[in-house]
Length: 167
Image (cartoon, rainbow, N blue to C red):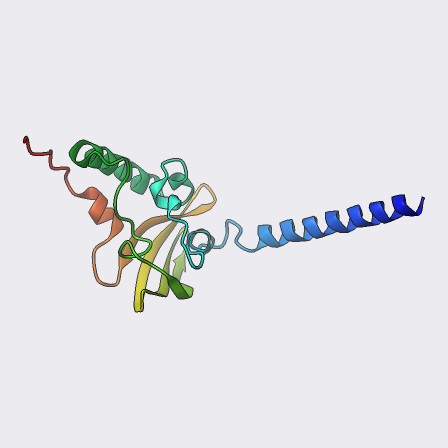
């Protein structure tokens, strides 16, 4: 009988702990927090790159216009270079990274639109990415991204696809 009581007490404690974790997760981003989508991507030390590069994941993080342009550009890359995905994103510049000193800041918010700045250090250099966010069907999604050094994700994805040259 004593053993059953201990098991029941332990099970109850685990259920209470699981409920507390679930409540903390639900309230830590919610769909009313424009920064929640960025917090899911920018995780130290390795960002969640599949948010952009995985065709199934992308719509959970990016607006339809970004997703559709990315699909178009992926088809171009496949045709020209035989690559299955793009070799760039506007999450972290370059292919080498080791993120530290991460800071995500809400710059502005008006109705269904917001802007956020993400700053971090990587490979000994400071970086800044500004993300334009849009609330779609109750969820905040990235509608564009720009490095402080110039250019934007939508600009890059909107470039014409130049056919491969015959060899």
